[in-house]
Structure formats: structure tokens, C-alpha cells
Image (tube, rainbow, N blue to C red):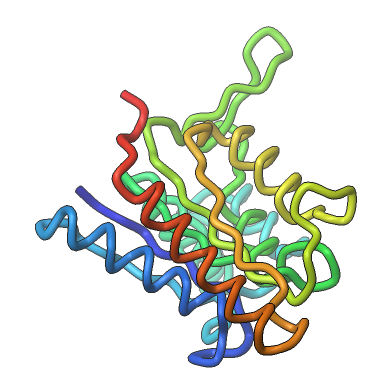
Length: 204
């Protein structure tokens, strides 16, 4: 069993999404001691934004790429290989201004590649990153889950399903900037959600 853990906060060890995700990862590893865990920290090592140069590298034949294009394409291929090989994926997604961080959006732009992680069949999209159990940990200062302001959850549900990842569990930590009592309650709720969901089987 291989697990990929993706952190996207800019706050390092002070990140609440990281702290809750680490609790989840520990719980999952406890249940499956033989699991291999790979971590990618998009906050500590942000990816270059997808631009014309990135697309040019992908569309240039490998034997015709410049050194820079080879470096760009190699990174993109590495990111896709990581998530392709993962049986479980944990995404730590703090909510910035109602949506996911730019670092996480950029990561998704890298792994969403036509013909590799999705394709169109009779005009309909078909995700190719199938057979994975995905956990998304969100952390936010206010309480917006289930409201029209919760763009982060809506976006991740849509894009993960588009790529073929439909077995997705969300774990939310809310109210973290609403005072000590609210923050403590939000983190305790997240811990309870971890215990409720950590033992769920993945889709066959």
C-alpha cells in the first residue's frame, strides 16, 4: 500500500491543516504498518506556475527539448507518477479567501494532463486516476462548510472526480480564528472525523 501526502499551507509547522493531516496519516499508518508514505510539501517547495513554457516543454518531443524544457517535463512527469502509484492520497488544504491555496491549484494544473490522467470518450470526460482512496483535510478560520462560500470543497470534489478519484472523504477543521474555544472545538471535531473515517475501506 502506497500513500501520497500533499501539504499546501504556507505556514509550515504552524499550519493547522498540516497538524490535522498528520494526525490522519498517523492513524492510517497505525492501521497499516507496512504502508509506504511519500510526502510532497507544496508550501516549502512551491511549483513554478503553469505557463507557456511549461506547455511548450510537454508538447516538444523528448529528444528535441532544451535543458530547461527537459527539467520542466521531468518534474511534471514525476508528479503524475507519484499520484498514479498511490493507493491512498491525503491532501491538506487550508482555505485561503474561500478557496484552495495557489500552490495546490498549481499542483492540480500539473497533474491534470489530457491523455494521461483524463481523456474524452464520445465527448465525455473519463478520469484515469482510479482506484484510490482520497482524504482531504481542510482548515479554515471561519465556518463555511455547506454554504455557498465554501468554494474549496466544491472545487476539489469536481476536479478530483474529473481525474477519476471519486472515493473522497473530507475532514474539516472550522472556526480556527474565532477564539480559543471555537478553535479547540474545531480541532476536536476534526479528530472525531478522523476516527470515524480512518478505517473506511477504499472502493474496489
